[in-house]
Figure 1: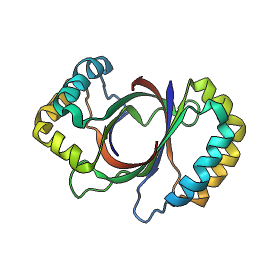
Figure 2: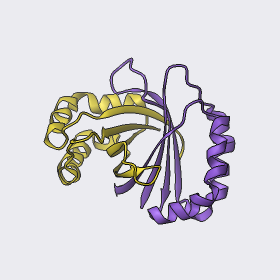
Figure 3: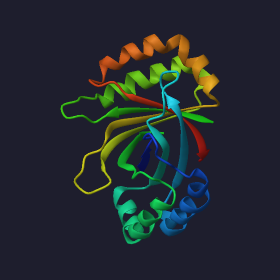
Length: 104
Length: 104
């Protein structure tokens, strides 16, 4: 199992429309990726580890797939449509990381 | 439900002992936090979003709790012991973020 982490930096002045993200972007991603997408988690940053510090990321999304190949096969054909939609809810591009799940 | 994200930067030359982390650190954290800890996910970074790019984080850990207060109550008394153990497996300090789970 692998996770594609999509992390939106919480830069000063950056904007993120969580309502659009949950109501429009994520449902579109789920529809386009179909059964290859094994799970989705969306988190909204509350703060850093120390009291009074801000979260490094305004939003973190985790997308589960069986393998890197399964992700690439499902995502590749739809990458332009998914990436084009980012400007509709985020003023900053996300950091993307693919990880191997060691424990869950 | 909230998540405490613990992200270890994948800096050039940094070291992370995944074996120690999975066999010793995480079991210690589970024992110390007890039933307040609702779930743990550990991921090992494979790469960035673009082919051939490196992962921003060597390791990402997600710890689930019912609330920020539940996390603070469980973690506070054991913070020194848990934080002291980091030097046994990582050459870099983690980025920590507390997030509210919006979708899972």
